[in-house]
Image (cartoon, rainbow, N blue to C red; front, side, top):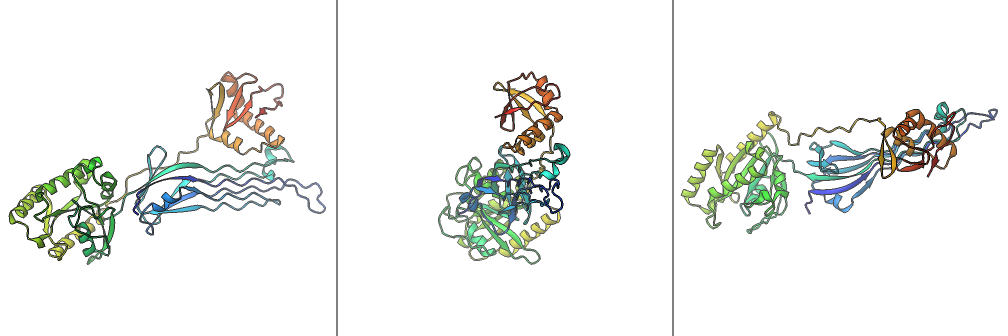
Amino acid sequence: MFIDEAEIYVEGGAGGDGCVSFNREKHRPHGGPDGGGGAAGGNVVLVASTGRSTLVELQKARHYRARNGMRGGSKNKKGAAGVNLEILVPVGTIVKDETRRPIADLVVPGQRFVATYGGSGGRGNASMAAEAGALPRFAEKGEPGQSRVIYLELKLVADIALVGFPNAGKSTLIRRISRARPKVADYPFTTTEPHLGVVDGDEVDYVVTDVPGLVPGAHKGKGMGTGFLRHIERAATILYLVDMSPDTGREPISELVTLEDELTLFNPELARRTRVVAANKMDLRPSTDSLDVLHAECGKRGLEFFAISAVTGEGLGPLLRMLENTVKSAREQGFAPGETITYAPAPPDDRVEVVRKDGRFVVKGRRVHRMVRKTDWENDDARANLTSRLRRTGVEKMLREAGAAEGDEVEIAGRVFEYTPEEGDGSRERHYK
């Protein structure tokens, strides 16, 4: 089954906890702290692979989580890093965030994109001595990994896109000129999914995609609709296949006009691509008048014209030579099949702010959130150290300036505690919930 859209949940691995340990070697009964730090969790990485042609596997399994980092050990041993989780996706996959904004376009085999990062590891007590005293009896917890929902959309990457009405002979043509073997039958909508075929040229090989038949109103979603129209967008050259058989009930010129209109209405940029017309089914001996009218219309539109038969091979030689030349020209000019997406993770923002929400003071800021997440809430010393760090960061002052009074609730990174203003030497401890 051809699936070109998927929604998945991805989560980086959690960082490993730091270790609380003290040196107990012989002849050193009062050795100092030697607890090592935990390691970072693994990332979730999307990798463009030629071994994938559809997103169907990501429809079956939708939750992905990288490995956690390992905790630190005694004697300053650092934990082992969490293993990255690599997810293979087809070449041509667009990655979108929760707002459906494109953030990556994977059009090159082997191209990688980090969807979520693993959490950082916690410091062991050997690293805490500088800020918590000579014998810290606590260590940091590992940080949770990033998590989010991402949306994947596949746009096939091909040099040539075959476009035409249902039963125009697209599948027959792609079978004859390439190694693809799509289903072929003499009734509309035989092709219900795109196919990719590789054509062996004299100088260069190139890829052709066979897009399901278009009908009037396709740009609005009618028939196969916009779901398949997007697979045309990456092609440097569009080949219109016009059905010349006398029993279609349509004039060939009307087919061409409709095809041009549908693509332009869907994406005006497609009108600036190289476009070629192939009048197919010449083996059925269509009327000379309809062929002449179509040929004249192509001349008006600046479109190269070829009369062919996908069944017998009539006229394919000149057409294939022309297509190969357009592919070579597009590559020499640097035609890029991907979208122009400039994406970079937002730089770390260490600003801290206090806002009033639902009768509670909420402290926001990446740095203070990380402090709270990495605190061992079961350890009194760790909680006292957090209080001191928040005070040094200026949170105490900001709460006071925001109007916080003793007993008010303060929330940081999902944790809630009662605000107790600093008194005297500032040794009073917060009452955490």
